[in-house]
Image 1 (spheres, helix red, strand yellow):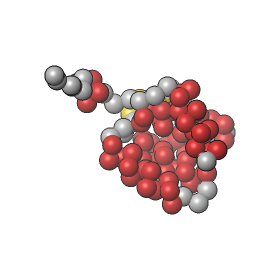
Image 2 (cartoon, helix red, strand yellow):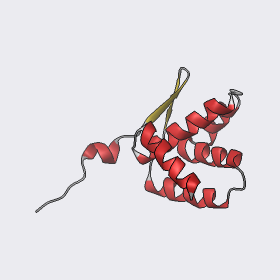
Image 3 (cartoon, one colour):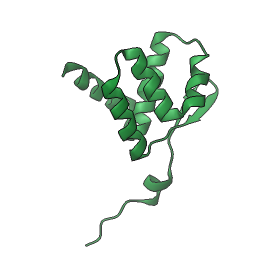
Image 4 (cartoon, helix red, strand yellow):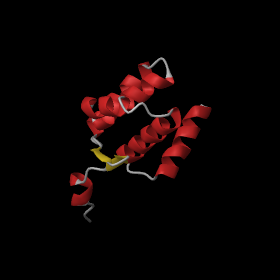
Length: 104
């Protein structure tokens, strides 16, 4: 019996659109592990946002988004979308996971 992972899962990189700009999301396992390690040491929700954006999109893209001076709600949604893209789940599933983690 053979089990296999489709090539699309190995090669595809998710994207997140912010306004008219599209950002490629780094969904590698090593990036996710690094991000979780940094999140465990984060002191505030805002520093968590920075960590997720820098790990998921890269420092340059995170800086670019930071200069957009977006509302808190917009930033919260972007971070949620990056997390969903990294995990390969829907926005709704990412929100459910986020709420479950908040309750712990």
